[in-house]
Length: 493
Figure 1 (tube, rainbow, N blue to C red):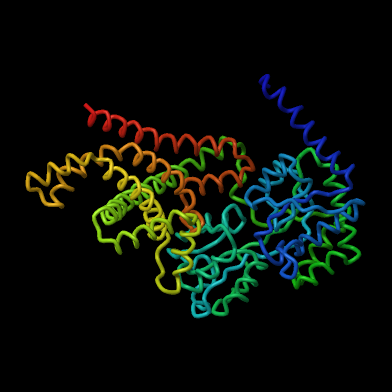
Figure 2 (spheres, rainbow, N blue to C red; figure 1 turned 90 degrees about the horizontal axis):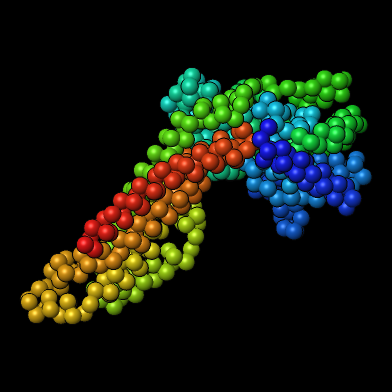
């Protein structure tokens, strides 16, 4: 073991033990979850947004009561729950977390307390022809990344040619299915029932594609606490308290008694479908994910290049209109620039892709291209306007004396000099756009950062995936910056 590891391991263990000891002394059970998951998992109480409700909230309170503590919620993004548990940000994670061999290999995992089925949801009109994943060959099937459903779709992609489409949340897959953007959704039955209720034109198939279990996760050093939690869960299974919770949230079904019987009789419930994300080591997993990361990096680069080209064209047109156009055009273009610069890019992507879906259904890549291009055009226009106005007035006067028209003056005198002035900030914007392209994952474009996030969630660590992602971004941005410096230096000679 290296000196750094010898030093770091006891230090990390000390922090985890100290954090747990502080929590116990304060009489709290810190539990992590993602309130964006919504009902019935965890959500803000509609009648009191300061409170959270959901079956996971009730399970957490059940566990806290059994430990003689008070439950305290810690908000953590769903894909970061494993890493946060390992760090000791909370003592137990409860948020519809799925059991898997990979998760058990790196964390202290509780016994399963709920069994769910992975089911296909399709449009009602397609219910007869899309019954299995094999029926969806060449079709787009939506799901959440880093889940059992995602692993099943990867297998279906290999075996049947299914096209997986990953989303950041479990609401838009079903709304996009209703709109016809995808042909099916594969998620667990709890989410599927909610999706069908919200979209009456959908129906779920009755034959399960797979079976999984919800579990709690703790840091590996908290195995003793995990064992105490397991005892509480077993007692709650036997005395009906868990059944009461799931009945309250209309989740109880015939699968649960069999699960509880196996567990209370001394058995366990291993994952029925082995996850594809169960590598023998982090480096083996890195080699396996490398082709996907390279492909995602290509998507990021292509999207950024096309978006920047659009931004340059639109930005130049806006700048020219503001400098040369009549007053009404100048006012309208100025208002547009301020609107775009004054609102978040993320919001603009949502509006273009989801908000306009009832009017025009843009493909995800095209929506991402337009969103990035329009957003950066506003910033580019300011650069070009400033560069145009920086050209000395004497040169413009000389062009007029020589008989140049306004268009000739712009094309032959003003624009070339403005371009030289704008080159450096243009390059900076391109590098910034390359990084901002990571936001398009919210509209189902799987670019480099999204693929890295899935990779990290599957192995439970951001160290290797983050390093690989950083190297790829540097490999894309550094040559561009070097080329721009050489070009700028040549123009100044």
